[in-house]
Amino acid sequence: MILTAINRIIVAIQGKNTTEPITIAKAQIIEFTWLATGQVIQLFLAFISMKLMTSVGPAEYGKFILVSSVAGVFALLFFGPLEQGYIRFYFDYTENPHHRTQYLKSLTQILKLSNSVFILVAFLGLCTGIVFFKIDPIFFITASLMVIIGSSGSPIQGMMNALRLRKYSAIIQVGEKIIVIVSLIALLNLWKRNVDSIIISVVMGTGIGLLFRYIKYISQYNEVSASIENRMSDKYIFNEIRNRMARYCYPFVLWGGITWLQLFGERWIISFLLDSTQVGKYGFASTLLNSTVVLAATILAQFATPIVYKLYSSQNENSRKRGLKVIKILCWSTIILFSTFALIFFLYGADIITLFSLSTFSIPTITLVTLCLGIGLFYVTQALTCIGLALHRPNIYLIPKLTTAGLSVIGYYFGCKYFGITGVAGVIVIVNSIYYFLVNRSNKILTRSSSGC
Image 1 (cartoon, rainbow, N blue to C red):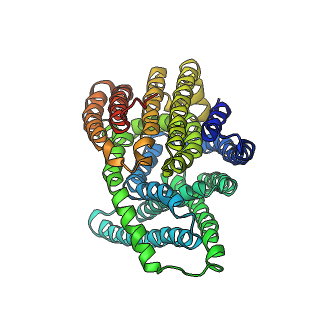
Image 2: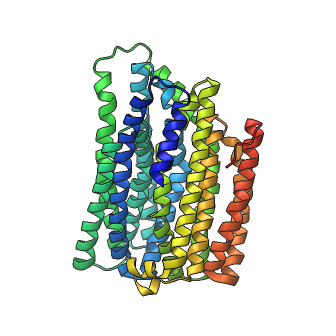
Image 3: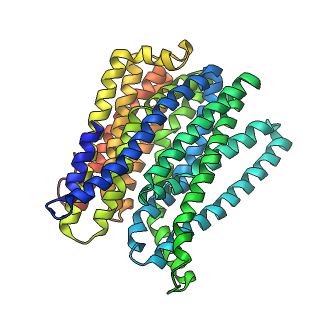
């Protein structure tokens, strides 16, 4: 299924050009092979880590889910927009080697500065928490590290995809998972069987992975900067990059906050109205989806998004039409993926949950299927937003985001209050159906033609 979608994307890229199809196809098939192989291995390792993590029980696992949602705040409000901006403008700086070098270097400078600020804030929070709230320092420190390290790696990971470093990216991601699993086995058996062991294991894996990504990333510009003369003031280039990023990423900050409500807000509502055990059950269902169908959809998105941006960076109309075709292929492939997995979960959902966790994590089959369809609608709509992002118009989606975020919060509350986590899953389907309609309508206004699936 995925290979068919990739083949269609390659054909869409080539268009009617018959002079270089073989070269393009070979390069991109090799690139995709590394990406897919890494993700398949990660899928296998994710099942092992899920089994280990859920051994602490739904209540402790629920605490881990809530900490993960805090990481989502940083990812969606800052590091995610930064990643989108750098991927989008990378191709504008590739013709001049010196500009490319300065562009790549500017990202590491921003990450160093921002992480220093976040670490300082975490330290102040720790001091305040110990003095006034008697918090557990081990939990707070490890949770803070998990949030900062886990979310700050996304811009470099995104740029590695843009730089076509699929091989290294796949190896590092697999290595991360292995370290997490080994750490989990050791800590759960030799230390404590609770959320602290899970968080420390994740910190060790993502921390080492971030280090290796950073080393590989800086090698991409150190090699160039040693042999290229400085043709323009570094200060001028950095100011230009900073200004472009600020203008492009600003809507993403608002967008990110709204997206967080859609993706993670229900977990806190479940925690407020029910308890951490229900958060653990719901969180495991979400993790199961993220490790299977969302992973497959991510493979396609990671492959297609840089291609879409590159095609749209050209002013050639035929190039942009090919970019639009790639987006449509991505949408339909995502629809087929989530529909297929919804059927699998309908038939075997209860057995799958028991296989990869404990019986205490069981939820109704209808809840899992409904959640799969609701999340699927979200990812299909996210694929459609590539149109506005590629055209430097992310702000066109603020109204759809604001509308669905408001509906999400209200819907999650009443759905959870009266129907539990099944009600939350139903609200996700309704809200993301509205989100799809609004984004599709925005795209039609933007392109003045039908650009939906």
